Image (tube, rainbow, N blue to C red; front, side):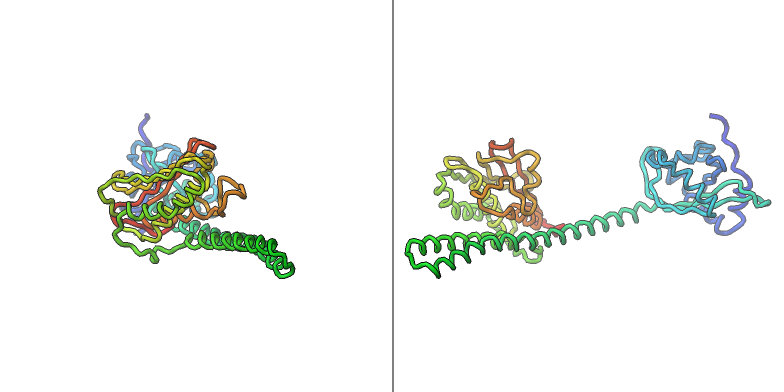
Length: 379
């Protein structure tokens, strides 16, 4: 590498002529970069070395584009900055800049023109500041806004779909009521009463499943709970349903108490929803196993079945509202239960995940909750 040219006296004098320029030369906050008309670096002051990692002698006469990220170089943005300054007098920008080590930082900067005594344009001066902190806060706020917007959309979708699901059973109920009112045949009346009873159960199920998808964390009633006892109660409540389908339902847990802080009702709701889901999608003669264990600092409830299984592309989607792996009318439900489990687990500081080798090969749902009291607001 040839000896770098000296910093042009014109630029040095221009910076030294004002207290602002003098301050910028000596600051450790702002980088001051001199540029030739050919977009070569001819001045390196202030925080330039600290921010970019280049010493003045190794960066001298290097192309301005060296400081930009490869995508911005491909877009021709270094040239755009200088051309805009040439045309309008200044060019402001907020962008990622590239360090010597390949890292990057978010900067806020401005490019101004540099004239000689004859008012002839001889170069440019760029002053910039590292604002990665501001950009990070902005991104966090934007992500939060996007999550809130998505949550609002989900809630609207919930209301619209819930109304639709509630409306469906009303038609056969009204029809059955009309038939009972107009026909005296006892057998017909009994059949219509059975229709009303079944459709009322559908209404109740929809309402039960839709009660908790937007539960605020403040409504959780946390207290120390022995996990085995809570899970056993949920299992016992569904043993009749398992027997009605000739399913084997097994509960496995350690003798030593596994104690967590949780909302007892919501914990049983999570286990009930997971177990109910397994029973729905496991055919007669199948097997469902519920296990309680501890892995690291997490208490674990695992529900295994050898039922319908889940396609690999749907393993994440099964936790979305109103998403169902099967759309068979013979399988009750509206696709809310697993979404409830996901949110309640998050409110307790834990998470739930699904695994399956594929369709027809069974499923495994794992609920993990912290052994300590850690929990978080829902996003």
